[in-house]
Image (cartoon, rainbow, N blue to C red; front, side, top):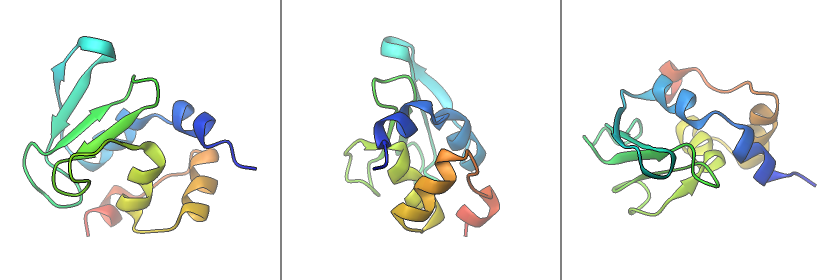
Length: 103
């Protein structure tokens, strides 16, 4: 069985996101929130990240309809790949080529 909770909490979501887009800290409450252009749809100021939340999470008002998603969902969406491949990579901390995600 795959422990997705452990992978989500041990994954450095902010570092991953900063490889994909330029983020600005917009809040210091509850561990902080960062915002910037979405690396998937390119919309400005739609993408938000809360890396220090109980479960690190992100959203894009366009791509996710404003619903918070976990780290695994972001890696899958950025890589345009499947759960099994990404969970294996995240568990090994082998992630993504940001150049590929931008395509």
